[in-house]
Image (tube, rainbow, N blue to C red):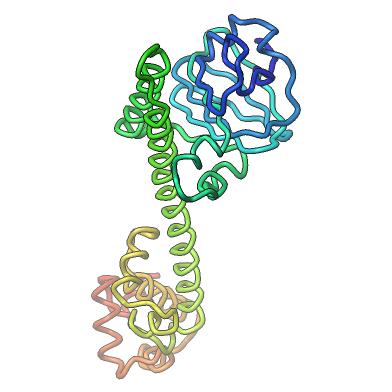
Length: 289
């Protein structure tokens, strides 16, 4: 395992010429030796790392990130960093100044507005073959363009870099949205279950709870099925049945009295309800238990 930070070269190519944009292969950088692999404390450019083979550890701002094949990583301004890597690791590093893109696009804050550059961010592309193929194709297209001696088009390189950033942004935004929606739906279901606990005596239908939660009954049903595997009506019903069984087993209340306490319109309706889901009448359930 080799400990190093191959970033003092920053925006310099192998000949020592400085640019606003550099793309280099990780294994090639390892072969260059200490000239290009000296210690870095901070950077004033943006970095994209794409791992195609092997694995390594990246240290950024006192946090440790294990990287593996398929990972694409984004490193923003002024993040202290270093590598620990195996010699088998392969991939690409893109370093660029924001001005490299803002010479080409009108939004001069474009790169700064990409939130994944705010802290070290890593995502694995193996879960999305299409996205991985597009990133790989864009990188190979950049490499091809850089090798041209004649008719090299810097704007094409900018377009390929923009493609990498924009398709990654779309993927990350979708992922974050799913997380956000998941958190929100869990909160709603938790609130729903608490409402059931507080109001199952008086509210028997999802629409009554949905009104309190300010969602539609259909949406409430949908998220309950997704998170709990049961409909909203099932959760309400199960709580009423649980209370019915508790009262039958721990009190001397008659079925009629229990029906009244649970706010059923009459005892016969309560008996039909109980038998439908327990397969016994209230009195039979009490005798058997």
